[in-house]
Image (cartoon, rainbow, N blue to C red; front, top):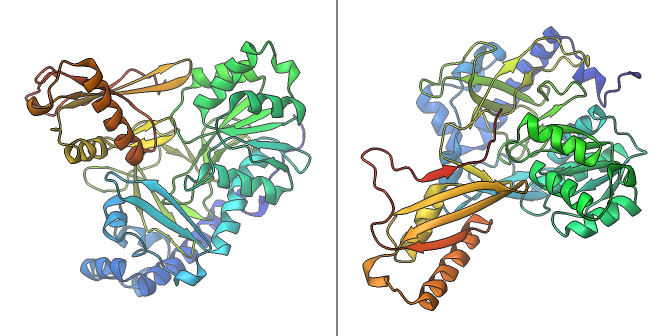
Length: 437
């Protein structure tokens, strides 16, 4: 193995005691910044009896109240911004559990931090300024495309901002422009591997050496399939719109968990029921605190993702804590083709269109792509046995759902009272994907 390379070794390999001191200092500064500039959160802190003078270092983290998705919805669109609007140079958004989106902002300095975090991932997979990075994540309000684009640009790579879709063109560009690093969702990477084969090509016909895949759950088995079909090493990246976007944590060449960028984020695992912090190595809900962001620095944000943290020494030399792939959720969110989908969003659309909330979501995976069907009971007044009428109604619902979910679902209308009722919690979701090993 050649010389180990880091993008910012002074942070990535920082002595743990120094790192804790840096985190404590940044935590105190950022908490004061939020307290003084976010009225909503200041009131929360006043209720908890906490002031900036109480937060002097890491040992005071437990005193800080949590933030959760409900807070983001309650303050839509700008209520949690900690800087004046004229300092915000970019907006991103993700779907919430209702039709209302989660809106976050970035200052120019925040974008620089994001670029650095994504550049660390690129260096960790062996990239440098000689590489050609094909970014096939979606561009737009979704953070995927812009995240890796910014990191690759800062590193000095050549970037192909191809976005998602148009598979034949993806492979043509990959082949003709000699892309060396691919960034997209794992399911799309698997699909590209199949398409490459279908076009009569092999991994020897392209120059890819590494892939950076995130935004949806994937298994080790899927990783090996992608590595074989594209002739690469496949790496995991983690991020979420509320905290940063891709680059909150990243995998190194060891592929044994994702290093959290701890100079920018404090991560904890908590018991989702009690909110108590759990010791290292315990499975719990991941909670992130942003300690360098200015526009939208969330304090102790509850992600609903379940994971495990370890400080066991990594062979790569990085000292940042590692987190596992998320092992599930504490809520009912589904990730379908990289998009967050909540059953409550579906219920809202059904009710607006004159249906009752009697439905079933069926998610599967065919040819490495998620399938997504929603079965909906017709209400007696809308019941019809005329096929053309039913198809027309299905199409109408399909379009209404697409508008809210931003991912296409097949809608199947079924006769009233044909979806099984349950005594307890309704079995709304049938998910046959194997998302975890």
